[in-house]
Image 1 (cartoon, rainbow, N blue to C red):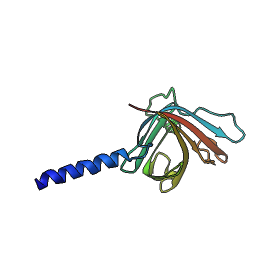
Image 2 (cartoon, rainbow, N blue to C red):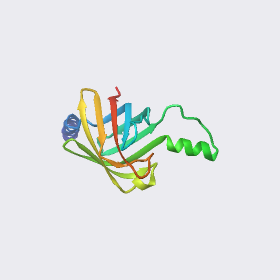
Image 3 (spheres, one colour):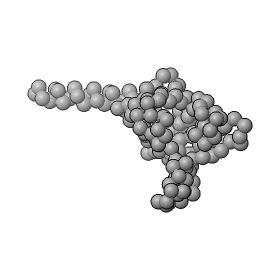
Image 4 (cartoon, helix red, strand yellow):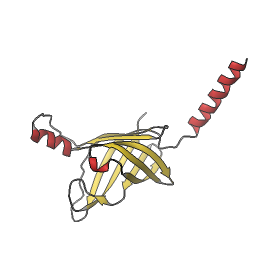
Length: 153
């Protein structure tokens, strides 16, 4: 009987915790991305990707550009690197700001940094905007990225 009560309590607390998880938790498919760089026309850099936010407090993202070409030579590998972004770390939510501490990234300069993103959720859509930061494609210039996602079901 004690075993039954313990299991029942564990299930009750687990389902309660699951019901209380943040709406950001889930798998989000990238719908669109636009980079706005000072003095440049807006660019659509990435067309494919996912953002995964776990209830355990980890975020992982992988984005790639359209029309990437496979290759193992140096020039092809440089082009592949320049046409993708990947990051993972522990996150927290502060109001409508999503903050993650990067522990691994395609861009070594992000490792150990804290990244802040403003977000809003409308139904099954997630909209994220970065704070102005150094552009990854235009050295010496700042950029803002706007991303739209749809919750994967």
